Length: 308
Image 1 (tube, rainbow, N blue to C red):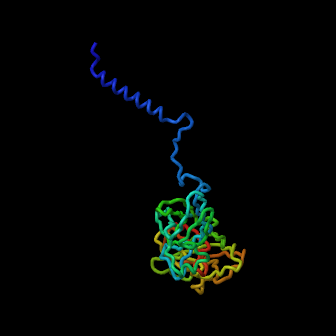
Image 2: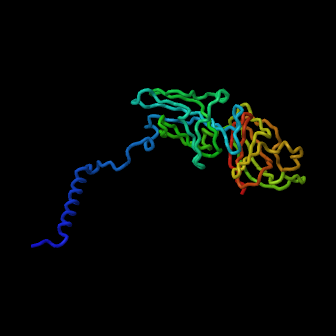
Image 3: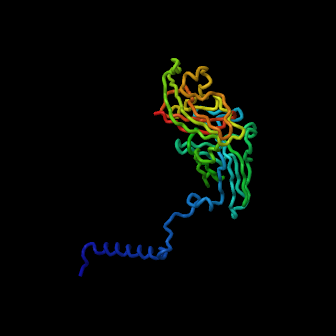
């Protein structure tokens, strides 16, 4: 009897399906041993298992260093890092050059290479990382590296392989112990904007008076903290406009302008506290960043001031 129309095509199709199933059965791992996860990579292994590790030991934010001053909204970050080579297989050690480090600001997507090393900059660092160098097997190297980058709260340090791939990273949060240093403890109790002071003093055009009620405690400077007008900066995080110094000593009649002003200059001894008002004249904004700095422009404390 003649097969129905299309029977031959169906038979051929069915045969192909059976062949495919047979091939799959031959190549599939036994139950419970199939590898369905991605192949191992540095990004998916714990830091302890990575052959090359980078550790950030401390972070200093400075506004200027060795006659290099950053523009508005930018800072110099000095990172003290350790690069350890745990690789026992690859011969020759791990090479470190000026292209081995990249600092990333995840908030803005900005990434910057290592700041160009100049002799004056090297001399300003306590322990500059010697570059280029090679980290031998089961060895490590520690030193300071510098980046110029927009001021932010979080960063990521990438360590690059000679071929340009990221082999390990270290997250940096500026509120972490490594970043804060524990020099000062600052509490902001209130923020107030004023368009004039008691004695009819007015800010310059386009500006407002910002009055901060704060306390400052010296928690980590045994030699004392020299609290002067230049010890603070107030930055408008919206526009990037930055103001150096409060007005607490610029106004000679400051005791009559504010209810409880901090009278500057003063020396804040270790574990001592001062509380009162700081006066700034700056652009009107909804958010600022208050920095306390020392005479070397190193940021001792930094915090966000919401003034919405």
